[in-house]
Length: 525
Image (tube, rainbow, N blue to C red; front, side, top):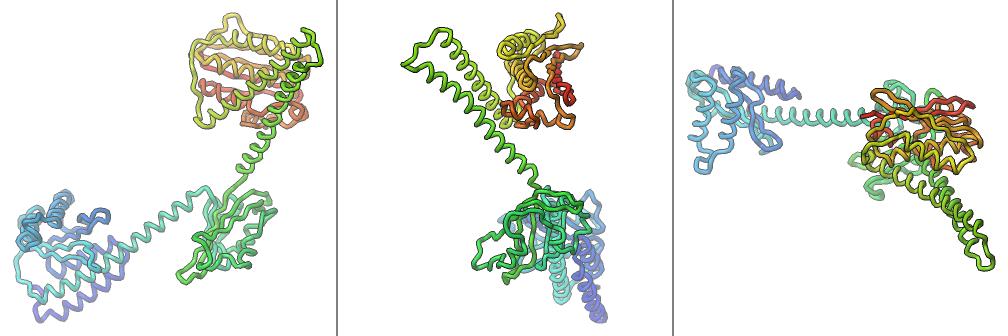
């Protein structure tokens, strides 16, 4: 018999002890285990379950159980939904409640004859349901139920605390994952600018060990070789962050410059400092987000070079075309036919040069926006395409272009217009960077599965460490010849893009002073 008078004091002492033990826990699984164990002990129950509501839809599911086979849990979850969502006709009547609890007992074990359900409610919010099943029948007094409900209320507080703690832990883990996986460097500073936290990215940027950074002064780690604007210490001395009443929603501070790494090397970074204030408007910590701006600077530099180069490339032929057109249009001069023909040829050549430049720019833009080229494939005789390019470009230069293709060179499936662009660009490149009068060889070879076309010049050559970079957009090898030679730095970039769009490969072999040979290899099928 539960709670007989001679056991009343012991029962209350027991209840107080288990309540303290339960509320001292913050792990939800351990809280539920203790709640269930205490309930079974108090009620001499054989089977028990704790069901909690799902935060997303409020539905109840079994979260802890004792004495219940695992394959029974799905059926109990269905019964719980029926219990917590009764039809309008039945409502939450005692008869309906007993009926559903009886069905749950039968689903577990037909020998279970009594059941006691206690709601877990915190601040008028239903958190869950505690149900104990017994294999014998006995009376429970109103005082017994009051004591049990007191236990249920304490259990609800413990469950609520454990759930909130679990939410906090989950949020902490989520923020940890975000910080640690960030490609940007992250520092958390205290108001005295001591480093409280650093992620892997900042450790790599600074050259410090991640654990070595903790508790170091910020000024000992972030040492500027050059910076734009005041540093964080200067900004704070001037009143940063501004008082909450006077500041905008975001009072961030951005500093950019070259940071001296621990190994003495310099790294261009931009740091955004964001203050974290407490409810009283006092500074609690500062979040620093550091970004490596080396590539951004390179891109800006390349953009500036490109704009300058394209401006020059466009201005020169336009000036020539305008000059010759104005000359031919003069009314005070009678031009001989040969002179007119010569000047018109120059105008035509400069127009072709403009057209090629615009075509290269459009192709580069398409590659950047779509990351792929649309090809119109058909059978292509590369030896014939090469012969036409050699004849056309050879007649406009002071170089000798020799063809070296075997007679049975096979046709391939490809986009003839694009492949002509590849050969034209490689020949134009060789003509630009070879001294006048030198020989340029355009040839090919083939195997059972591939064809290879090459362009060999007798120019200044390319250093080995620049083999990969020569195919970058806007990149030009820095030597005396390139500084005297026109070009936007797009030719080889487009060559590589077109070859790779054909599932091919491109490479270069060269040495300083020994000329350069560019190869592109394409599949025959």
